[in-house]
Length: 308
Image 1 (cartoon, helix red, strand yellow):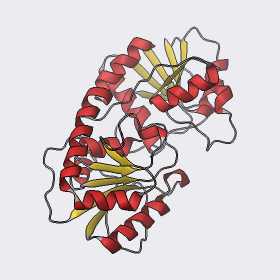
Image 2 (image 1 turned 135 degrees about the vertical axis):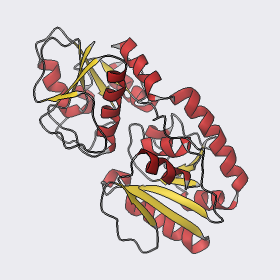
Image 3 (image 1 turned 180 degrees about the horizontal axis):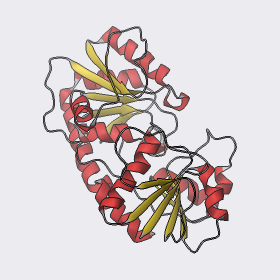
Image 4 (image 1 turned 135 degrees about the horizontal axis):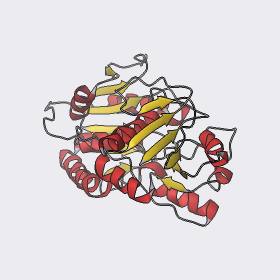
């Protein structure tokens, strides 16, 4: 098939959302499809893209997929015989120029989490299919670092929805009660924090896996995610999860079974620092769930192809 992923109206840059879409395009290319990315802004540099990048809609496409709320209208209004879809990966309340409730009614929708499926159901009365982007094959727990100190890891991102200030506040309080090592990765310059920590900027695949494998507990404090990817990756590498009880993690983070969720971030982190048995239990359960429910990228992109 000739598949177009449209970012006309938005663009691609070094962020998790762009990484998700562009990883999907690479796998679809590997599956033998002709994949084209339509966008006027392409500033993504994290890895090489196999698809062709163009600045307008190509002709004779079989499928056109909108990638963000701002890209839906151009796709919906385009005169074409191509089948149209929107791959919804977040409930984009941060984009004040568009109404999600209205836009999800324009073209058929595919979502990447059960929470988003339920949100679309509420708006349209129709439950769209869930297609996970999958987890990269290079994330696995073999070769985990062994240390006398428990290491707490996280993502540094200055966007408000990630609530990094809360993350830092939680870690500072934990450090007042327990001896831990703190590790962060991110795309931005190393932040200034009132405690010592290790920072890895823009890690490649091997360094990224090694980073996760050096963490025992993964802490996230986001307030809104479509499907929060770093905790999945960290979980695949054997981390025990502590974080916000939000829709975008419940596909894999189940309180008391595969993670500790809720507002008592400090208490939950301390609990895992103290209890290696619980860390191993949550991590083991999570690795199994990720393998059976989420799966790898190829399996999920084969499912996407079947739907479109």
